[in-house]
Image (tube, rainbow, N blue to C red):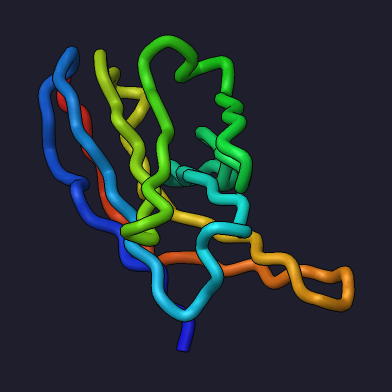
Length: 120
């Protein structure tokens, strides 16, 4: 059974920091590309940051220089360090895993989401 369990969300004042964690089970984490997405009320889900199996990262322009994605393959966990938070960062944050298959396809998995609220 595949599980992606996010933690670390909460309420923080503008300028503050939070660290999100996503611990996975049931997937081959080391070969999976991982990502953090977010969805604010009334808006589409958007990619915040991604890290591939080789450790290369990419970020949405809106979070560059403030957020850092990292992974620990020994713990099957991906992190999102969020600094200098702004009210517009308020959203539900979702962990995503893209796991390749032996036949050239992939599986796409999602966590249940964790709420991040930034007060002004």
